[in-house]
Length: 282
Image: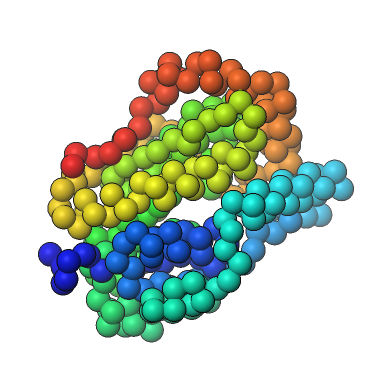
């Protein structure tokens, strides 16, 4: 199915520390021949472009800034990678593009010339044809969230707002025109601890997804996987504009009132209520 002993993998990702760390992990485990690194706007202090800053109180702004500052601090302590991708893996082909340029004709032509067997997505913009069409069935997305239970934006935030830590996780699925709607290859839940806060669960979810990625990529390359279609009749969809300081404070209150201790006591029962695809048929 591929040239050489291992499939040739291209990764399309963003440029922040978590994404550089993920690319470095992938390069150390698989035959990573190329990286497309997309510059994306940073997370605004107000929580997203659809949030109207003028409608927010000073306390709202302070709470949202605190949330993202805490995220950055936790990720900085875990994803220890302080250099650029070209410095970490100088022998891997690297294409750096601006926001949204992953779907440009120039990017498509360059990726086509490299001719990877499979493409892995993590944190990129939505991939569209012709790139999506050319690698149909050979493009794997690492999506933070357990689809289809939570879809859209903030898929590991809203479960915590709704006191459902059992629905925090990551989904590896095939990329399709339906955003985050492709057939599922595998899903993971992070290890949960009584002392966890949101960003502790967040980084452990990323780690769990990266741990699962090599075996999933290999199974897809070998044709040993039967992806499982998503049932989109279940679950909830949130948009970036839904994010607000009130939801943040609700989430913090859940942590402060024993949500994680409660979850640990009831984990088996609660996870049975929301089954995941530990892996598709391999």
